Amino acid sequence: MGISVRYLASHPLAQEAVNDSFLKIFDQLPRQLAGIHSFKAWLRALVVRTAIDYFRKEKKNYLTSGLDELADGYMAADEVTDNQSVQEILRLLDRLPPVWKVVFNLYEVEGYSHEEIGKILDISTSSSRAYLAKGKECLRKMITIQNRSH
Image (cartoon, rainbow, N blue to C red; front, side, top):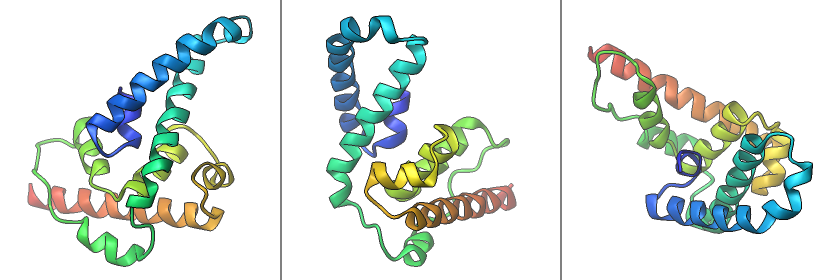
């Protein structure tokens, strides 16, 4: 569920993707069993691909242009904590526009290249780079705002 939530904006949609992932696992496992070197890695990749499939279906609902205007709307200060915890950073990451969040996760967490991300999300390589740069910049600003509030 944690993987799916990183890619999908709504919890019900993430749950639907997880359920679909389990159906795919049970369907593919008997055929794939001999070729699986790491079950955990195979499972993770399958859940990521399923979540990305759901994201692509919902992508038409997300605005993917006007990066500068979007950044301004996502930089309001959040609740302040004593330390910058993992949960706090994940909460800030959730405040990014959906496309920026997905590109950030695919690049920084999953290790995909910008070319691969472009193919997965049907965007140009330069757009992937721009979304990642803007996402990182926005996260830095949100963290800076929080740290000043301490």
